[in-house]
Image 1 (cartoon, rainbow, N blue to C red):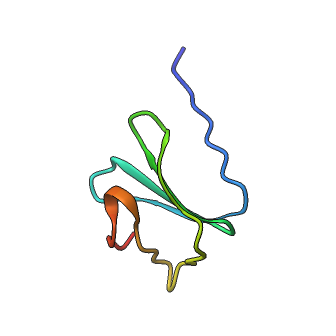
Image 2: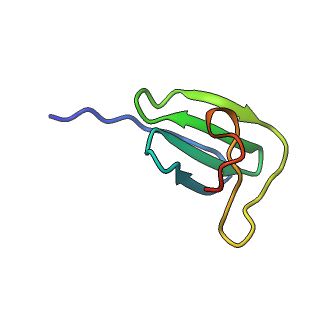
Length: 68
């Protein structure tokens, strides 16, 4: 049987992976979060509202300023 990890993000508006696939950016009504795809632990959070524009959001933490 495989390993499963559930990741709950309340108020999720958008999500996307960086180009390397190492990080998942989540955008919610509570801000943005970055999760490592190796451990699924959150590695960065910004509580400022920053909704996607035309389907694109700006990364924080280890993917700071990258367009996702």
